[in-house]
Length: 291
Image 1 (tube, rainbow, N blue to C red):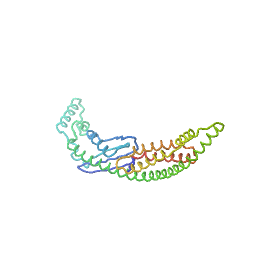
Image 2: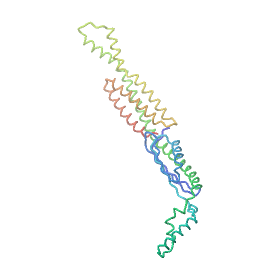
Image 3: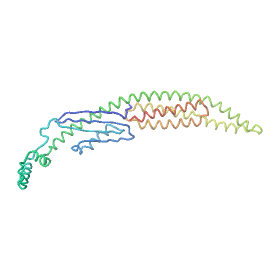
Image 4: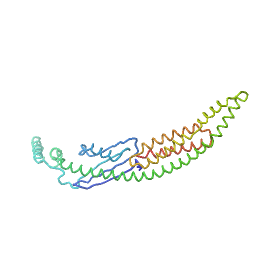
């Protein structure tokens, strides 16, 4: 099943005292490029988040942004009263030595809050990671749903174009078979005119005609193209990501079309070859969006 590489999801989870927000943006990319922005407290879990992302997405440029805030401010910070008291004494002695006459106020102490207020990181970080992991998984699942929905639209358009491509190729194959006898007669007359005053070796002439007819025969290219189309349609149904394989098949199809264009000396076939090339490019544009 085809999935688009473009998508967006945002999830918010509230659990274990935290509100976690996870936002994911997915854009086209040749390979998987996972850009993660997360709070400092979760730096140690970046590899786990990255591995989780790789298990959910196979190709594309992914931006993953994680934010959190506590549901309540209670017990988020713990005051070390011994350190706070020591800082108070130092400020008091400084005022006394400078003879400022100022009293030590709470605002003075808060300037040094980083020295006596510490976050309860151990237990909180473990709880926070548990919530974030669930939120990230849910956000990726939501992203996958959106990519599958967009993939259905892509699949419809691509299948329609492949069907048109197949119909046009059937006509080219028919024209190619019809023109072989005509080309044989044309080349026979041309060679006969060149040697009209000389004796012609009929056996050699027939050999040359067969060789030229073989060069003009496009049946093998048509057969290979039909085979590529069958594989293309089957690949569209694969459960695994198929963008790279589909792109490779398009390259092979384009190569066969070029060969047909080179061999064809028929104006109708040449026009149809141009139409097929244009259709290939339209399909290729769509395939660039497929994971």
